[in-house]
Structures are given as C-alpha cells and as structure tokens.
Image 1 (cartoon, rainbow over the protein chains, first blue to last red):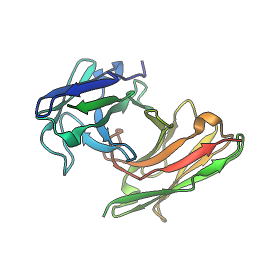
Image 2: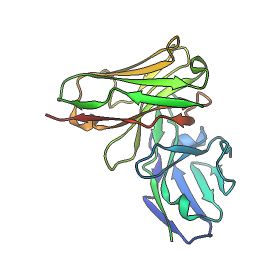
Image 3: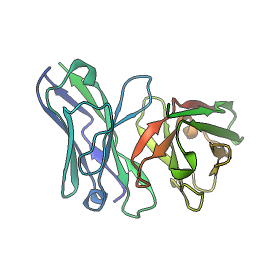
Image 4: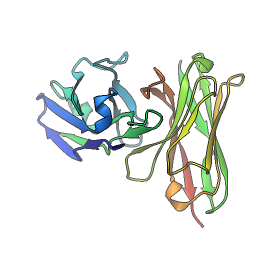
Amino acid sequence: SSELTQDPAVSVALGQTVRITCQGDSLRSYYASWYQQKPGQAPVLVIYGENNRPSGIPDRFSGSSSGNTASLTITGAQAEDEADYYCNSRDSSGNHWVFGGGTKLTVL
Amino acid sequence: QVQLVESGGGVVQPGRSLRLSCAASGFTFSSYAMHWVRQAPGKGLEWVAFIAYDGSNKYYADSVKGRFTISRDNSKNTLSLQMNSLRADDTAVYYCARDLTSTGTMDVWGQGTTVTVSS
C-alpha cells in the first residue's frame, strides 16, 4: 500500500501528553518524518528518522515506530503546538513519497 | 540563512502551461535532492516530484506524471517545475522543499506559490 493513515483530529489538555499516529505498510521499511503546519504557513519538520529533532524544535516533541505505525508524541503540550501534523515516508516502491492525511491537534 | 523562495504561480486556464521556480540560498544547493509538494485549498499535503542532487533521478506522483517536469540548474541554484496540460485539480499552493537525507525528510520549505487553474 502507498497510503499513510492518520486520525483526522486529536485534542489534548494544556500541559498533558498526546500521541499522534501514522499507519502504513511502507513504515515497516522506512522511517516517517513529521511536519507541523500552522494556518497560512509552510510546513516545519519536527521529527525525522528514528527520533531526531531539527535544531530549534523543543524536546517535548519525540518520535517512535513499531511495525507499520509511527508515532509523534508531544509531552506537555503547549498552546503554540495547536496545528496540523503530517507524517510522510517513501512508499513501498521506494521511488515515490507519500503524506498522511494530516491530524488537526487542538490544545484545550 | 538557508532559504527557498518560490515564484511563478498565478491564474491559468485549463490545458495551459505554467513554470514554477524555486531559488535556493544559504546552502550548497548542488548537494541536496529536492522535492515539489502541493496543497490544494483546505486539503492536506501531496508529494508531487523529486529530483536527485545532480538531476540524475527524477520521480513523479501518478497524478502529474507525463504532464509535469522537474528540473534543476545547480549553477544558478534554481529548481523548476514545468506544468503542462493543467487541470482544475492542479489548483494548489506549491512548495519546494530540500531533502535532508535523500530519503524524503524535507527539512527546509519555501513559503509557497499559488497556482489557480480556472477558466
């Protein structure tokens, strides 16, 4: 399958922990990358590889993977984390890339 | 600083062509693979095309294969996307993105350029 599946919406109370998941067959072979996108802005890479954060990304963001599921965890969610989150990886063919449908995170 | 700036978007009639450009600065452009990614209004991200650091490999989403062509000029630090036979469902914000590891991790994004296909 060349698809990545995400829950459309997730909510979390301020300061609590939330996990956003991404499922797809290609994740058995390739790591997912995670992007944060706020309204009217370009996506920003927040997690890639096994669990790597680009410079400037807070350490409350972390990633993990098991089988066909990749997860993005925000430990101690902040109001500024409210955004759309997308996963992506290579697809099973290895020469295409695919994005998940995105998860809208609401911080209550 | 590391920057990507897209240009060339606009309003175009169905069936016509448009060429997008992406100017790179602040890094060694010729060392990185690049992607085009688009986002239709109110929708999610869709990968469009990939080009290797030296232009030796190019891959396309099925939705654009045969109509779009990705290219690069490493002497001018510029990435391009030639879009032919445009359709209404090509309407989107088009982003260029740098591939950190040549595996699809897109670590630098431009601000996007808007393409509207409408009669």
